[in-house]
Length: 289
Length: 305
Image 1: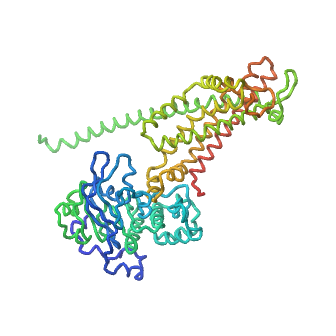
Image 2: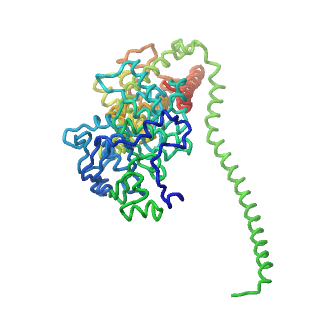
Image 3: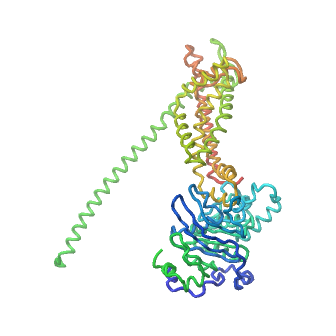
């Protein structure tokens, strides 16, 4: 926390702390991030638990090729906002939303929009690793294809998808010899990367991460952060985090939420060095939260 | 306020000494209480399993001598003839357990899944309460009901009526254990499946039910073991049969029934057979319990599919 009191000037460098990243791997990421098309646009979103309004009139856009971090104190509605983006919020009894969330221009809350279809196009990873305990490592990664109906990939295609997804999640080398073993035998950090591989397998355009390192040790955290950093080229990433340093390390844009409201959203370096809103400044300098 | 500095250290050490003595005394007392309570719990644990040990020992002493291959394969002999077995009763018990499981397991597991998924629905609350009431229903009452609605309209006792009566007793047992086991599956697992684009019913069946399966199997086996020894509902339904019969619409013998009728008979030979029957019945229940234990252990051991 201490180094945040004096904001670091350039948090947007490639992930230098990780020796694994070879120059070749870094170079595409090191190029100035070109902000792509608007992938998700949120207009006047409110989210409720019963009568409690946890997200208040939020407007924000998430662009291709960027990692957007959502920070804020506990209970500020950041996880709720994230869960509204793939209609997971409504799975809680009594929860509902108002407003629009456009995914590729189409409102996912429109009448007739199918939450199942929405969730298939948006991957999600949770606070705690959630491997399916009855399935092998391979079957866990392939789980998103089960029960799709119709165009289920063949066994060989599935094997390729599993390998590619595990490689993208930087887990392949550790598990390639035990794909048939239970996923429960993996360490916490490996389980979380397995969940990321599972979310990536169906090739979603958006990846939602809900405090993905909250239950991990520092080394596993570093690996997951490195992974998030590398994913920015191919997937639109939205990451909720308690940890401001993490937001600074992995994201291009950072959104600060407080009491259900979106206070400020800006390029990460700008938000941490020259916040416009006094509440943001108070939070990032550690005056509360 | 400002007492001389020289007075303070000795006074402080005096109170310290007193505190240390108090601590030592209370530590001794706590140790004594600990030893006594541990002893009480050991005794309670021993007393808890004492009846089972006594029953097993007694059954083995009285019944083991009558157990041979004949006991499992042969029919009962008329009074006065030596030998004979309970082959028909053992087969009858298996038939009754089969019918009861075919009825009790699907309905019980389905109801349990419903209760776990819709935990706050008004119907679920009612079903849960009624299941608990049904769980406590005396088995003789179940027997009378089965007789009134299954035996009387048809006009004769039958294996089917007995199986249905036992199945009805299984339903609430299986319902409640299924619900408990499904509730043990973390919500996060359900959310992970939903976030992957699973439909709700698919999440329930292929993730939640699948994860809870070892527990549900254990619960089902325990329920089978529970009803295997039921006698009262069978008195009015399966009735018992001295002959070999596996026909569902005919009276059928069962181990508890055979034990009952032999035990109240005046013949020593039949008494010995009753003891042997009781031994076989308890062995059956023990085996089922052991299997359920193995199923639970394999879950803890992990292992993929």
